[in-house]
Amino acid sequence: MIRTSFILFAVSGTLLATPALAQSIAELQKACGADIKALCAGVQPGGGRIKQCIMEKSDQISPACKTALATAAQARANAKQ
Image (tube, rainbow, N blue to C red):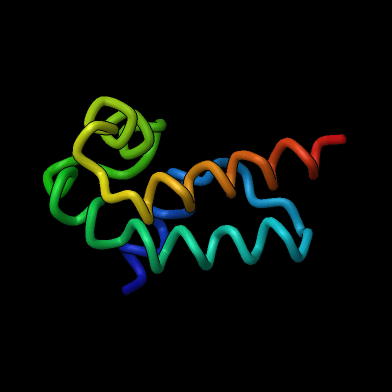
């Protein structure tokens, strides 16, 4: 569980203290955990490697994960404004 949380944090980018971003991180964990485990199992977390793996295999990730990634990206963009 801790490794999955770390991996999803790595995928989501920098965590900012906003409720919307925290919610999108939780959604990522729920929606993408299985995809990351299945598609990127051998990828060492850190340095953007998990994010790169998911991007390279974006055609294989579940629709729920794609939606959660888009939501997280929007939350990050909104938090930066």
